View 1 (tube, rainbow, N blue to C red):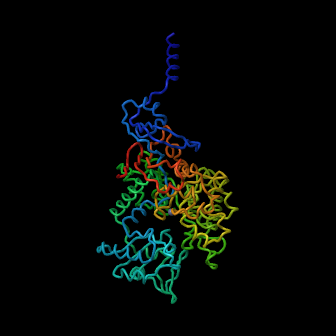
View 2 (cartoon, rainbow, N blue to C red):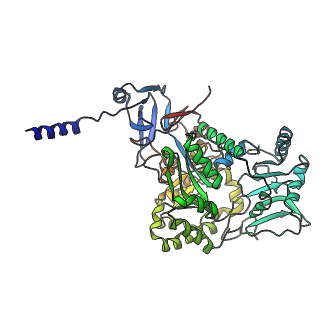
Length: 555
Ligand SMILES: [Zn+2]
């Protein structure tokens, strides 16, 4: 008797709706999330406990269950899952904001004026550092020169990286300090731009940038922390609650751990260790770091580079550039060296993410993964990634499927590069470039990112480019090769669920489903229903991470 009573009580308990504690109700919202199958769901209220989602549903349903939870009135505004940028450069974003920022400058004159003003405002700076320039936007038809910089700053070295980070521009003082002259040979994997008499002209491409980089004083601990603070603040303001940092060193690793320990991270960081050298040896001593500090820091990935960038013709192409018939760009290393690095990472259980822009670099990466899987067959489950996967020979795209590779792509690259890309590689090769639908149709996961500070970290720029393939002026009308457009749901998925998948975090991040972290944003309009032309202008009003508010827009 006693026993059967117990059993029936247990049965009753199992039937009764679970009454779960909640400490936050975000009510009266126009809420959207994908579910774990990538289907769009709509809701009016979000119930949270201890930073995690308890439920989404109607007002009536959840207000009942909220008990004495704190209530936030969303005033009918649109709520979305926090967006994740699968590939950005966090400290570089901060350095860019705290140094000469030439991003978006429209002419050489405007850039020079900015350098001059910054130098005047920072008389104690031993070096004038910065970046973000793009001679394509300036319509210069050539690289800028050291002499042009000398005209505004000649008393101190000036060193300014190109927007893609694959070239940099020095004044004469910097070139002198680096000891570079007409007799200096181009290093392997790099190029020194030269004037008619063979003297360095001012711009250094890819590996040649190290000639000057080696002389630049390393940022102080204070400068690094200031850069991280600036980057975190900017990410929160644009609705990013997570980021894949595409290449950290040992100092940055330690800084992230310190910030995670001090609960100072306002975005979840999944950081890739740059290369398999000394920093990797140290960081990997205890194996992959997964979900550290309440899922705020994960370090389980190695980042490698197969080639440079398209703008500076550093991308490695199978055939010469259409606008430079003697140049095919540069592979950074031979295939055997690439495979050896992948093997080393796999042997310690690390996922591998490899930068590949040109079709030759992408082929090398595919070949290298294929041969590394021969030695480490279980590593195919690590969700290895090709960063950018920008230009592929059409026959290589299907190889992503058997190799189980993720395409980590940046939609804004398509709309920023479109004119330049067509000059560089011609109409025919464009068929395999920025080819999102080719990947999606074969079932390849696309992780969406921006590569900030190469592009703006604003993920709504990425969503807009993904859906329209138009620039912010609506050009070209109907989009650039619009057959590769993503649907809005595909684009949202790339910046939420699939960006989380690419960091093995789809069970904790990426959607607002029960048990996942309550990382969400409130925005100023209905991104799902309004015209796609409005997406890039979306304003983030509030950003919440783990049920805590980390950003509120000033009205
Ligand atoms: Zn990058």
